[in-house]
Length: 137
Image 1: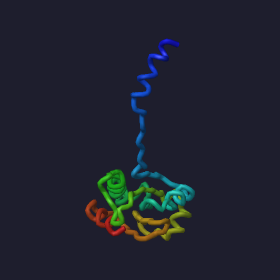
Image 2: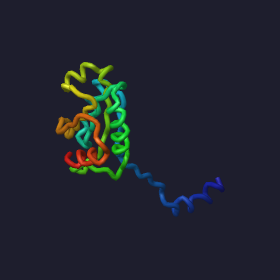
Image 3: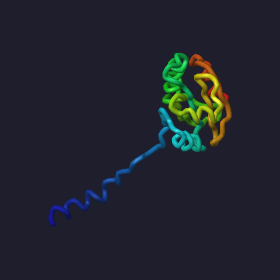
Image 4: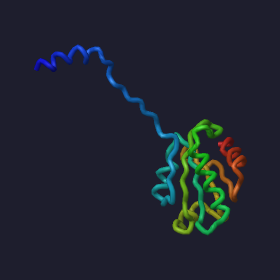
C-alpha cells in the first residue's frame, strides 16, 4: 500500500495520454465483385474510381499502376477536394458488372461521386492526363 500512495502525486501531475486518429485517405478494392462495388461507390465522402480491366489487356496493364499511384498519393486532389478510392473490376470474372455498366472497351474508368457515375474515360492515358481528369471531378 505504501508504494501506491507514493505514486498518487505522480498520477495527478502526469497528463493523460491522448490518441489522435484520422480517417484513411484512400481505400483500394481490388478485383471487386458486385457487392464490394456497390458498397464502395455508395461512400458519399469520397470520389470512387472504378477501373474495368482484363488480365490480357496491355493498355490496362499500363493504366492500373498509374491509378494506384495517384490514389495512394495524399497530395493528389480531385477538383472537389474529395479524397479518392480505387475499385478494380476484372471484366472476365465479373461479366454481369461489365454488361450492367455497358463496358465496350478496356480499360474503362468510371468516376462515382455522391454514389452516382459522373464521368468516365476509355483507353490508357498518361499520368498527366489522368491528373487532369481528376481535376474535373
